[in-house]
Structures are given as C-alpha cells and as structure tokens.
Amino acid sequence: MAFRNDFAWGAATAAYQIEGAHEADGKGPSVWDMFCRRPGAVRNGDTGNVACDHYGRWQDDVALMREMGLNAYRLSISWPRVLPEGRGTVNERGLAFYERLIDALRDANIEPMVTLFHWDYPYALYRRGGWLNPDSPRWFADYARLVVERLSDRVRDWVTLNEPQVFIGDGHHGGKHAPGLRLPLDEVLLAGHNALLGHGLAAQAIRAAARSPVNVGIAMAVSVKIPASDSAADVSAARQALFAAQPGGCWCNGWWLDPVAHGRYPEESLRLHEATAPRVAPGDMETIAQPLDFVGYNIYTAEHIRAGADGQPVSVPRAPGHPHSLFNWPIDPENLYWGPKLLYETYPVPLHITENGMSNIDWVSVDGACHDPQRIDMTARSLAALSRAADDGVDVRGYYHWSLMDNFEWAEGYHQRFGLVHVDYATLKRTPKDSAKWYRQVIATNGANLPR
Image 1 (tube, rainbow, N blue to C red):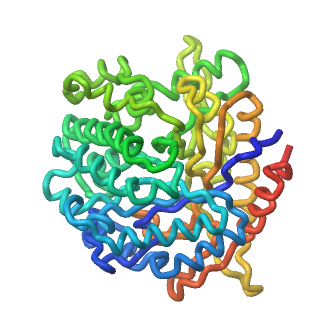
Image 2: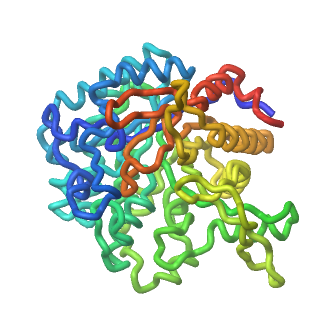
Image 3: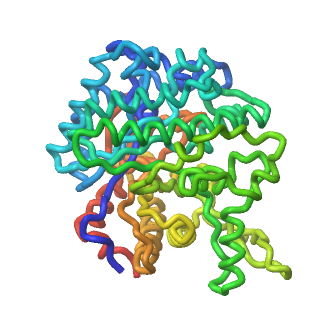
C-alpha cells in the first residue's frame, strides 16, 4: 500500500471562509456578504467579515503550511475581490493579493490548486439574475480568463466550480445557503444548467489563456454508497444507488457528472424531471463536456447499501452508537475506498480528493496544545482506504484535507471546527493541532506509516 511518488499531499480552504477583509482594498460584496446580514440566516449571526483574517495573515499561514510539510494547497479566488462588479473594471489590489500568495506558496515548494468559484458570487451580478441570467456562463468565463492570464505562469491545476449541486441545491432550492432562494424546480435546474455551461466555457478559457501547461478539473460533492458486504450483489446495488435519479435533481450524482463527463443528462433523471428539466440548446452539451484532466471529489458522508430480494438497493441503518462528527455526520472511512473505486469505474478520469475531513470539538488545552485524536484516527483510516483504492487501479493523484484551519462554516458560522490548525476567533491566534503534526509524518513517509 503506497501512494504514487508525485502524490499531492495538501489541505484546502475557500476565500470567503478564511480571508475576511470583506470591504478591504476595493473588494465588492458577494452573495454571502449579503446573506450573512439576513437575521437568522447564519448560526449566532456570524459573518465572514473577519473570518480568519487570512487576507492580513497569509504569510504566517504559508509558514504554517511549510511547517506542516504540505506539498500542495487548494485555495479559491474571490470573484468580487478581483472584479468588484463581477465584470468590467479589474481591482488590481485584489489580484495582487493572490499573486503574492501564490508566489509565497511556490517559494515554499507548495503547489497551488486554484478554484475559480467557491460560492462567493458577486452581488452585482446576482442583482442581474445571477445563474439564472443566460449571460452568466459568459460572465464566469470572462472572469476565468482574466485570472488565468494573470496567474497561469505560476498555477498548473485549476478547478472551475466547487460543488455546483450544493450552491445550486442549498442556495437556490433549499434556501439555507446564499443567496437564500427557494425557487421552483424548473428555475433551479436552469440555474444549474447555466453553471455547468459556465464550467465548460471557463475550461475553454483556461486552456486558451494559459501561459504554461495546465490541468483543468471540477470539484463535485459526492455522498458515497458503501456496499454492506463484498458480495457482487451488494456491490452492484451500491453502484446503482450511487448514480440513481433523485427527486429534485440537485442531489443526483449523475445529474452533474454525466454532462461534464459524457455530454448528456442521465436518461432516468430526465424521465423523472420531464416537466422541469432545462431546455438544452444546440451545442450546450458539447460546451459542458470539455475534456477534463482530473475530477475533484469532495467526500464526507456515506450510506450503507445492500441488495434487496429483487436486487434493488436497500439502505442499511447504522448500528446504535455509530461514531459521528460534531456536525452529526457519520464517520465512515471506507467511503474513500468505495467512492473513488465506483466513481472511477464510471468516469475513468484521474481524480483528486479535493475535500475530506471532519468537524470536531477542539480547544486549546492547559498544556497549550490542541489534542484531536478523533480527527487523526478518522483521517488515518480514510487514507488507508484511499491507498487500497489506488492499489486496485484507481488513478488517484492527491488528497486535500478539509480544512487547513478552522474557519467560517457557511450557515453554521464558527460552530464547526474542521481545521488541522485551531483558530482562536477572539485573538486569531493559530495553534497547529495534533492532527497537523501527525499529517506531517504521513506526508514525510508518503503514507507508508498509515494503518495496514
């Protein structure tokens, strides 16, 4: 059990969750800036106005990454920090921040993976219809081109969108994320279609504008299905459940992956949503299905599946007392075996685990350290499972732990702590947790010290 010699050992963050400086140096507002002003929208009334003040403390944070031994770091660009109105006049001070950050990463021998959109949509463009506006894919592609023209001499790996099913499903259908909409399903799926068109146009723009060789991908949220046993029937049932059509469309894995990988929406889902599916114009699917150099999978949760008497998937309840995180998400480390394995069989594209981690009850102890043995145990088991997937032939290129540091966890505010580094939000002091020191040893041995 070993990872490839050039394996990317990283951690991940997102701009709105760590940067703060919400009005500094010409930045424009995002939908998350506005959503956080809505009473009751975010736990405790928390906002990302300050967050971890990464904008002011980025040099210290890069030093922490170097100390941790990371050789990769996934960050996102704040679209309204670069283009305060979403398009038009460029905010040079905003772009300069990312140039300084990426230069420092490269000086530290840390390879940046840049996500162009991690949910902080420019509020100015939202007021023009956001993802429902037919021009929105082009707006996104124009922004992508600008960033790539400026940074692609130093950035190789690019992610267009992070989790379209979440920012569409929770932001435009469920209303619990920005922009906080509860649209009818036909408009939800139209917004999703435009986001996928934005991905395709952005992928074209990245390749056209790149100043050096690039890898282009997209990051998808996946709730994995784990077979209850290794029997062929249970594995087949888990595979079927992983790609099954879901009422509402947003949470069907195939609804988002099939267009990107195969240039079509799944037939079963189209039948289920016959009255609400978006109208697909000529050329749309060809635009969406740009060749991918990798797919990023964000994996946290799983469901256990067995084959019923008719071979159809049946959900298997967990035993009482099954371990869970502070978020109340069940701990299922085997999701990093079965997820990559079943996904790679269907979409045989090199993959990165672009997010994986757990929220834990972490604090700095009287000894000055932050002890998080549960995170270490979960991550060790998960990485061992991922290593087995690689042994089975899955082309897995990297792992990015979520998250580098505790941060603003969207509608949960600062209640959930996912970080390898503890952040005291009163003082903004960083304290590497035991998991950060443990992860350094994993990286140093290229995973050889993981449980077998």
